[in-house]
Length: 457
Image (cartoon, rainbow, N blue to C red; front, side, top):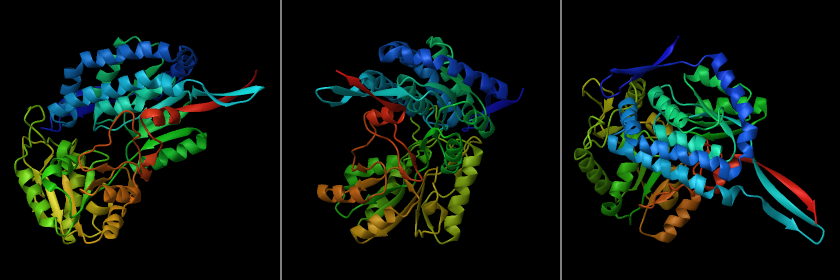
């Protein structure tokens, strides 16, 4: 039987293998999901949540095991991996605790003779596919709210992290969910293709824009609903009045932590010309004091890239920029460390819009910086991308922050140190960054369908 091999990106060593799911196995799991969906829905919100609270408990009991395999398999620093488990269970619990408020029937019209009641019902069998960068959070964000809503899920994690995926499946199996409510398959894009072309009612995909566009066509042919959370090239705009000392940890962390492998991370820095020297000097200093190394070391802040393929892509993007005139202020090359896929935190200046680091999504610790003079120029530079996931504004002028936030073509905007991630707040993008929203009432609404029933009094 063909297997997926899991490699430790810190040293290139083999961690283990997982069997690739066959077409027969995939279709059997879809059929079991189809059979389970009606009874799962009829449990109601409280009945489903009774099962799902056990899932949360079991995840927390296996927190260290999850964190360790995540760090070994995809290079996330261990302190971040532990936080990822805690944060994701916070989201899971929020979905459970707030489902009744947003999924209960709602009276939308009433007169002397009639009453109209709107019901939110599950869509059915959902095919969920996630990437490798936040193994536990990706699973929870994609799957948990759907299960709470009454859908059943057949799930595929990335081929880069099969051991993490297998552990997630084992933890859920310990929780005693009814057979078919959740199942997992393993493999690459070919396996995912079999899944989305099966007897399903919904596609939920997190990953690249190119694959998202393909899946959009699949959903159109099947005439089913699709949710897409795709790539990003988030701008960070630093205005002349910004307090750099107060906010540097924010714009540094949003680019470099976890080796810059974050979909909505700050990927292009747009700095007022009078702030350029201060920002550049502080970034270079900050990089010099940041520990790059073994992700299992509690002191490590930046680990390796997830794979050799990812490293090669990043090298090509930086080389393209240098050949077109970019200046390397710091970094600019891979780091030879234990045979792993490490890349030095890098700052590039003298950027032009034809460079790949500007027009493509850069999934690595590389930050291009450009300057501006006017607010309009800053906004134009920020919006000069096909993506529209996150955006970052740094200014001490609240009116300016509100004005610029309204002009950014992105689904989410952070001002100064006020992060936008909360389980009650929508997560998703404009343009080629996706369709639909996760979390909060917005996620519940996107994962259900509406039925109105007119009743006589």
